[in-house]
Length: 419
Image 1 (cartoon, helix red, strand yellow):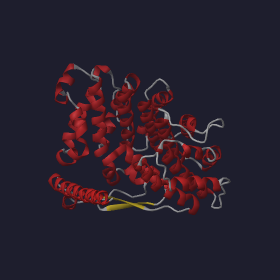
Image 2 (cartoon, helix red, strand yellow; image 1 turned 180 degrees about the horizontal axis):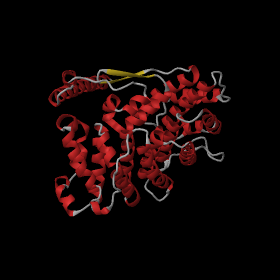
Image 3 (tube, one colour; image 1 turned 60 degrees about the vertical axis):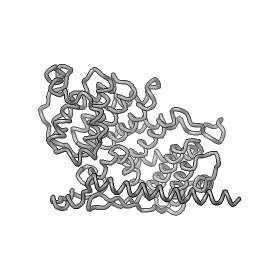
Image 4 (cartoon, one colour; image 1 turned 90 degrees about the vertical axis):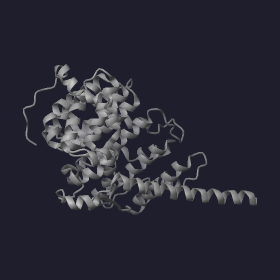
């Protein structure tokens, strides 16, 4: 993108005239909750840009709830459609608003600001504009991540945002290494210490450690080979200790990160040898067949599914290929690196991921999809399901599930009576 002459943003911009012009957005939370579904069906590009202008102005509102809802509203719009030119012209305004909310806001407002920073960089893609955003927001995100007095939710959101923004915009390799070190300093606090028992007990900080580990793993995929080797030597023998954590999400994050590290190691050396392979595979096999009665059924089911794949990756160098469909296209996820990258951006964009895979040049480059496929209006119309049709489909599915549950209950009742 080319540089535009945009004046830096100041509090004076929030004049009475501007705010009265945007009085229709005094409750942006209603718009923030609508999400991409309403935008796709009812909003033209011009309508959405008008709404965005109003929401951007409301990030200066005196009310914390209004500012937070405005940040979430902007994030939802940007996650659902491409607004490259619009954002390019207002990137400094948005960056200043995000910086102000991160510095002066509290938990939920900081969380919303961090999430918006990620989507802003995804919209702009790599380049000078994103680099400027990262230079401004990076130090603020880093400060919150390392601030023990900040809320865990805010620190967690900042860790994810720092990872995503760095993945997109980091141009300086030393800055990339600095970001990796910052995230390492967080998640390694969960490593099993020599004096500890065989089980790591989760703490309120565990969610922050999980987000930091996942962000670190994402950035490792774009590091030079020499740096990857250093990180493997540092973490390959300590990371498995996280598999003994009593938090299922930490166990899963650690397992998937290990599978990705093995993939990177074998990509560099096909005959890569891991010394503790026997003990590691024993741990993975135990988690893949876990029947611990103290754990919730949903957690056990999720864990077993993930660790079956992780075990196959470590033992057999195998990856179960997944297919992602979006519009008339499809993408094959055939590696742990690709899966982790997809999962990260899906987490940020939510239901807007499909649209961005179709239209966002940056994401299409990341997943090697080529230039966006141009579709005529008739083709788009045939692909689109109306809200009424979707409602009918959901109602039918709900009835089918209810029927199945009723039958299952009847069977259990019969068995109970028999005994």
